[in-house]
Image 1 (cartoon, rainbow over the protein chains, first blue to last red):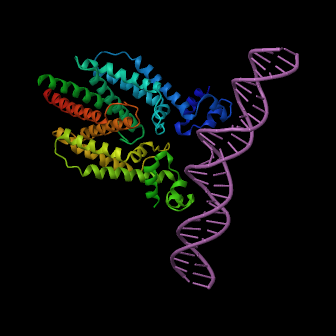
Image 2 (spheres, rainbow over the protein chains, first blue to last red):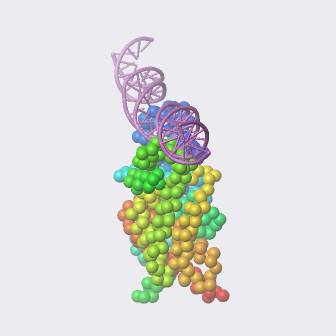
Image 3 (cartoon, rainbow over the protein chains, first blue to last red):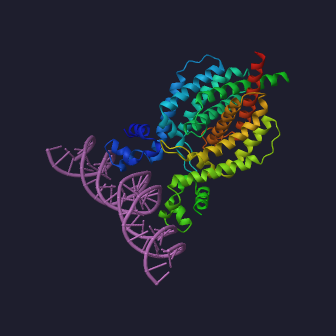
Length: 191
Length: 191
DNA sequence: CATTGAAAATAATCGGCGATCAATTTATTA
DNA sequence: TAATAAATTGATCGCCGATTATTTTCAATG
């Protein structure tokens, strides 16, 4: 119940507006009760974030892949982009949440992210014929982070007020994939 | 005085820990006084952020460019990356700050970002012989946002606990630049 | 059925937050 | 010096997350 109320409050009012009092009122309890279920508000919100990441993964996982890296990355990015639009406040919440100094994200959180990056890994794998997994994972992470950067700056209007996110993402993928191809063939030529 | 105190508090304790009471105590006033100088805490923090962006620009602007896009982008990225490390809390503050719904960033803020992206624009310009400025600006923004994504996820440990930021950035630049080169030459061949 | 003990939930409280504003102090000008 | 304007305060408001003693609920036991 608490998790449901939190999700709906974040969706409705945004991350910064939720409070323990609002959450517990929503489900007909007083604020103290929340602490019987969650250690603190951080733990509750992390639970919500993991859920959000898993929902995103479910969405992307259901997209049929073609085997063409560029096309598949675009499909994944489109799905991702759409998810951020339709779950704006939940997605923003993922990154507005700050972990306190010294604390580390729970293992389940890391795992949820890993599963997402795995999708990108599988999408770009055909680019590397016999290349090491490490390189693939590395590039998938770069793409993942870059995509996040574009979506994030776009959402906060700190990138451009006028241009289309979609075209930024398309450029990223097109050029990065071409770059991998080009750099790989350079390497094989030089052998 | 207030701006100085705010900067030093953000540097010392981090963005989320600053408060009007702490700031004004630091300079020997009471909290109400701040509102004679700034409309609200948002306006004060935006002032600090603009200052941070301008300091970053000054740093990057002073780096000598060679004319080689990949090398120059790497130099700029290194400078940027170093700045985020040496001004961790100030840089985090830039992106932890959320603008309220409906509000828009002040024109000076946008301009400060533009000036930063301009540096990337000039760095990659040699790649485009006779290409339109729009394309160049577009790619510079993609690079800027991607770089932000890498630095940001890395700082919040939401990317990888083990790998080196530097190698992510290097991959981004290497592949993206190679991609631009490759896609441009494809286009000219197809003419 | 009545009793008891644990679990669930509350109400009150703490210190802190951003913001507002009438009242007061300080400085400037006539 | 007196009158006016500017600067500053202190109290207050309605929030916040968190803690804890107290009360309520309720199922298990005799």
